[in-house]
Figure 1 (cartoon, helix red, strand yellow):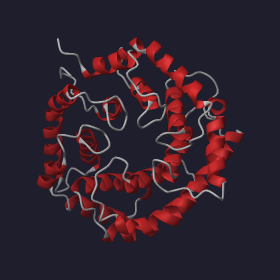
Figure 2: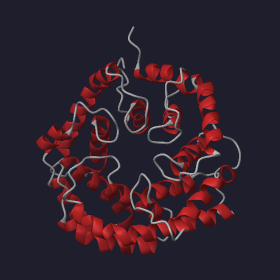
Figure 3: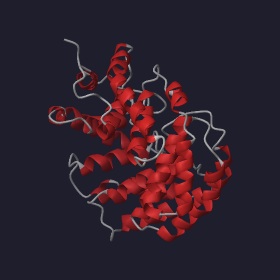
Amino acid sequence: MEKTIFEIFIDKVAKKQYPSGIGLFAGQSGILLALESLPMPMLQDTESIAENLLDCIIEKMKTLCDTSFDQGLAGIGYVMNEIHKSKRINGDIDNILENVDAAIYRLLTNERICVPTGITNGALGYLIYLISRLDNDGHNTDSFSHSVIIESIKICLNNICNNMPSRFYNLSRDISISLLWDYPICIYLIGKLIEKDILSHKLKYLIKSWLFYFSGLIPYYNLNKLYLGSALSYIQSKLRFKELDNIIANLFYAVDIRQTEEEISRRILNINEGWPFASFVISKSVDLLPHNHIRYPELSNLKQKIDSSTGELLRRGLQNKLDLSLINGISGVLYLNSYTHLIPKKSDL
């Protein structure tokens, strides 16, 4: 009998067929994150495997200097924080991640280092980690760690305020499709901070000042229109700006459903730029779009069509030996599946 995608993943991890690096995007931390997202009872069955992998990562972290989100401490710290929330790690999360918080703060306050704005090794990646720290119920808001996190968030936001406006002019010229596209990630993270009432007044004003760019610059790819429209819909639930309602409606109206289907590559099966990513974006768009919007019936039909094809496409990917990594392999598909149910329940994958 053909093995399921879950069984293939668990077999490979049990045999340690993964890279030696411990980073999030292409290393062991991304695999650990996928292990934590497995459905029950698989999660219980892989407990010893996950614990061994976790011990290995913790040991190697001690000598790691890289603070980036894709390969370094920020991404690994993000995973540690997530599995602490699931009770895999016991203890005080502020003590566990104290050195990661400090390393990121030292980098951000080092005037000799110019920190980029992007996700892999820049301010947006650090914000993902820092906001995840605040999301953990075990985090003590009266601790020294909290003050370090808040100061780091302020520095990251200053970076974004200074650099994003000049980047907006590339919004309509981007000829790539990626989960790591800066604009929607940035908007989502600002929405999370507004939700937590952290610098919310300043951030609301910031978004209002950006409406000029969003009203005049339309992404080239239809999937990017949906991605940006979904992120703006999320933040609009916190803002209620009348102008933003019109921008979101126009973004979704500009989507050509037929071309959207052509943009989705059946050959690429990773969460960064392939079929799983497209499925995620379209699913979120359907969830957020008002049912009376002119594009809703077409998008809903496209979602059903994509869902019905996912099982066969993933089977093909397994036959082509899809690797284990988070961004380019099975780990990413399994992690995203825990949010959007990419993998059909009745599929023999």
